[in-house]
Image (tube, rainbow, N blue to C red; front, side, top):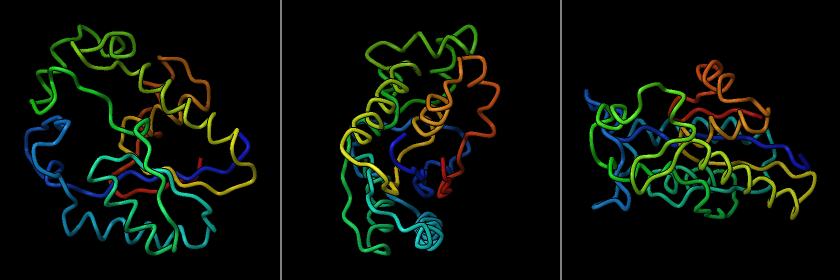
Length: 187
């Protein structure tokens, strides 16, 4: 890599407060924004990032992530570059439905790397698009500190892809590579 990367998962939304896990709809019928706690989580992350001398911020253009990136950008006095390749995975026919319906489509978890719900993406699709973005950024910049603001799944797959982990290793290391909402990490 030509640059130093930091990653931030968006802050808490009402979806994290629901008892039953519901997959985010896209496009959103109405904006899904951060809770007050989510805004505070991101402000804490922004304070942490001040010492890292961030040069650029790339962010998913989805509302909750856009809002998170804009909070950080205000604190760091930077502009945000919004990038579709940082969006959450496309859940296809499962978007907006309970996660358990999505999980029923797969006999084993590892299938999620190669099998997608109808009109959706699999994990390898997501990994390739986020790695493609990093490759494009590295062609354009060198020696920069770059913040990537995105969703849990793309950030997990980005880290695993950069480490060149195979599917089994990605699943095994998912607990260590996953970020909590509002968490920032240097990769």
